[in-house]
Length: 300
Length: 323
Image (cartoon, rainbow over all chains, first blue to last red; front, side, top):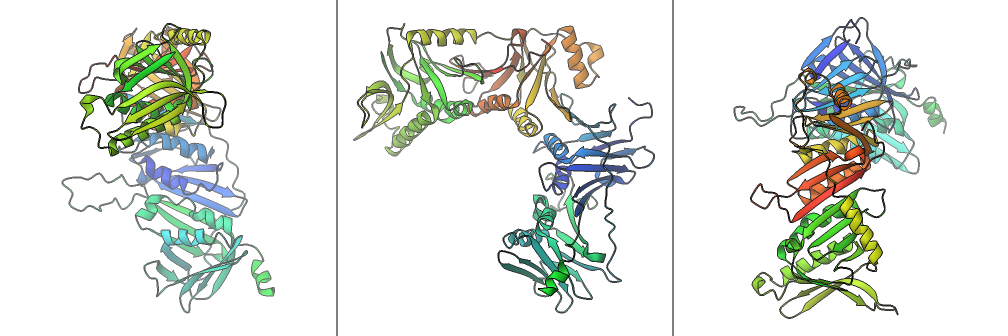
């Protein structure tokens, strides 16, 4: 044990919520992630081929207990699949699962253990790596004075992106101020266009901000990664996802995942749908547009 | 060589609803072994590398009018495909239900008769052995033939019997797992993390399962379990240690044993829960020869052990570990 004590000791009472949040950024079997600890919480970052990055923000408010005592912001690399599979082991359905997460262990491991039962204990030690430097800084800057963004029901977004699978490799997203609408268009083996009209579908397209027409193309596989593992709780809670187009066509996709304690029916509480408002994990994806595609598109 | 018996209602439901689904998970084909007093389903007893499972029933637990004779001390054994056996019993049950059975249970006239026969199958010149199921109704009878292997030779039956005798050794310390579902749930999730499982069992009543690879160590420790056989008090200085150091110290003291088994085998043995056992005991055989799991069944409505039914598994050990 190091004499200075661990950088972080925290406790979480909803393991499944954390599993859900981390699963949302798991778009393939083996992925390396970087975890960054700070006094504000834990951020997990995954990246692919300098074109796609995802971040999961687990703010300290999600934890029952959060004791942070490091200088600077410790970062370490960890296998995402191993971390998620391991966490999943701690999540026993039908009962609350309190775990303690601690970093670093004597050999720089990430340590997990269940703390809710005296006679049965689950523990894990996950080896960490020195993190790769994040090669490309996904500095997201607004495209102009008015944000170009829209909020759509997560279920509808996922469905639209799933449907765009067959036309294939590249998807064009267009935002149009008049009439206010968002268009997803895929061209490949065939054409498929999905329109969200703001006034026609206010229950699907919840918010819309756009003062000039923009249009960018994104690789289908990257778009798909943003919704392929949306946790079922997001759909169940009928949440929305916010998409913003920034400078240069960088697309930001944000989801909200509940890490609230599973609401146990309580005889003294009348309102059934009570949820702790702050217990949300934020998921962000950044997708780079296909370069020069716009020109080719115009020339053809 | 003759075998003929009537499967009782109780026996039918024991097999159909509980044991055959569980045994089918252990392996599609098994040995079915009839003796004067017992019927035994055996997996992997003669070929050594899988999970051995032994389900033994006293003849009254399954049959009445049980008649067996063979020149080999009234023992008959053969291999049988469990899914075919299950299908035959299941359809007999449904035929029986359709015939509105249950009215004349007492008469014994429309129950399920099982018989060992040799028949000439269509398009064949050589008679082949079958286990025949005959359900007699009021107006009709349905006969189903389940193909089986040629009955085992005298030498093979002897070998099977001696393997069975050897498999009866009890570990010195057994711990009771009170909640098999919990363990199964846990192992189901753990499966994704690694292929090899270290199992430690101590005389203090600890069961410790652990996966350890270069990237991760993931384990679960269940403490204060009921111990059958050799037991010891937990040394006071060990109580507040981590699961791993506690196990390590217990092994050093000779109060615990650790073996390594395949995750696949362990998960498979947990499928025995389909037989709806009332409790399960885990133990490590002497010199770490195997991991033994013993399932117990209570007499319905009581907490008394039903001695007419027994089920246990023996998991091959990959690394005899610290024993």
